[in-house]
Image 1 (cartoon, protein in one colour):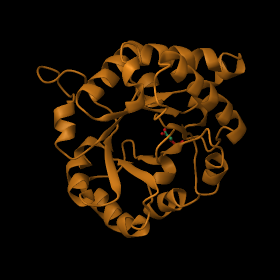
Image 2: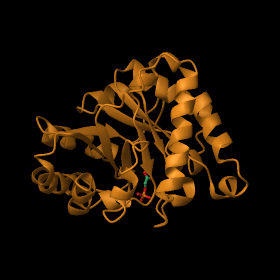
Image 3: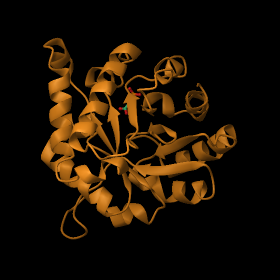
Length: 249
Ligand code: PGA
């Protein structure tokens, strides 16, 4: 059984430290009474520390948008999980579409990152999703299957400690979401895949939908029991808009 549903904000490369402070101070009172769902903010690395301080003792969790899998050393420009953990973060997004398609991350690298996040005792959110040409040629399930199989390779026994985000690439930042029915279909497929990869798992993984979620359409996704949460980019950048999504169902 899926535990609490998870509503996550992915700020991407947005907000300085002072903008983060202002957002969080405005956001906390808007969601302070909500305890029946998990709320997660994933600011850029430079804002993690201040966000961690402000979110301490609140009902809002903190996550990073990426990480490197090595513990330390000569990896210029990279951020380790120990560094992330000390800020108070408990989640790490791995394999986001922009990491895959702008920065060339492949499934093998993503698998190393998911493994390292688990080893650090943090909770990974593994992102999967097909490109438009893949959807149009009818291979959505095949693409998602490969991303899950390789992304979770060797860590199948820990599947309950991993959440998945289904984000069709063509729906991210375009204003054109998947239909809730199409999303639901892929979510059911992902749930089946997780069962196949680990038949003993309890089913604790949340499967989130992401891609042009807004206050106006969030409840359309959340009405399906197959959809256990949302990963929100653009519409999470304003505290008012994100709090409406959090409270939309
Ligand atoms: P979007 O981004 O909400 O702006 O489409 C979602 C994401 O990339 O996580």
